[in-house]
Image (cartoon, rainbow, N blue to C red):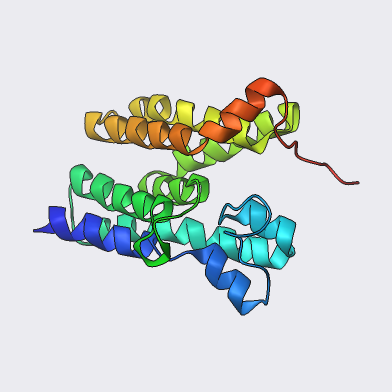
Length: 196
């Protein structure tokens, strides 16, 4: 029964769009219809301010953290934790409450791994930061962290279920970033602007 309830609960929680709710509360444009059209923290930052972006980021991370922590609290095995996380991730990507038009899943993925293994989450953030500083592309940094995740899981946790889970999330992240990949190849992707 847990293997059904955990992913379902994770999906419903993941379907709550932090970007849309924060934007409404703070009187900002709907991020699905403005800027890049992506309901994520980066687009909220473009359309609003740092507070709105930070709240969106926090909400998206918590959507990944909470289902996995609940699975742990219920003594679910790694399969249950992975399914809870996958449910939350799919909810963020394809939210039932918002017409199945969701974000790209980077922050929610981070939240999942923060709950599973904080060291892996820290290494993901470190890799993202290094790639972002060197190349100045947020999407490229996210893709690099996604590709590294199954390797990190295999190294630190030695659980084939979690390694496979990491591969599934990496594949979904690549799918959601397909337009960014095209722009990266064409040299038209937006760069991170470092302000003094």
